[in-house]
Image 1: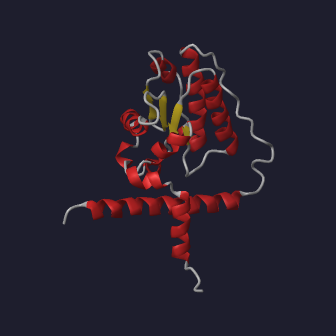
Image 2: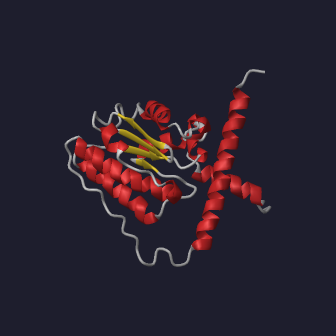
Image 3: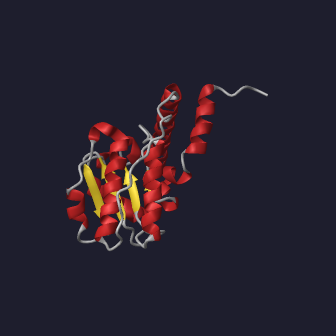
Length: 210
């Protein structure tokens, strides 16, 4: 039995990690939001504590009767085949809603980018809520999560479901060690995303008429 080369191993890893649907429509967030309520950036990934806090908050507002879908877009890499929409949260929100509409007919959708918010079906008071929230771009993905926590709680409250902004509680041991392993994960994630985009490009070219 022959040994698998590094490139083959990376391709196999990409096939396991990248959702099949992401290769179909080229938008990673749309595939994630079909099954979950939040799409989180891969590079850099937000802390486990902030991710868990956002997940818990979305479960809370859903239980109160106001389910929401949230997409956090930190870089062009999070947009797959639509990098031109980076920095344009509202047009991207419209695209994303159209991609998940067959599963969620009228989603309460929030998009958070470093440049600002995109919102659909969040009620007439959503714009006022979002205008009061600052996005900490220097904090990268954790800054997006912090803004999303304020936005989700504020929008749910504005729509008649009073909700407090939760505090992100980071364990004291969260930052001890693991730095090199996190770096390796980021590198692997970057390779996987690059492979996914390359596969999409090849697929698009193959479909063009000769």
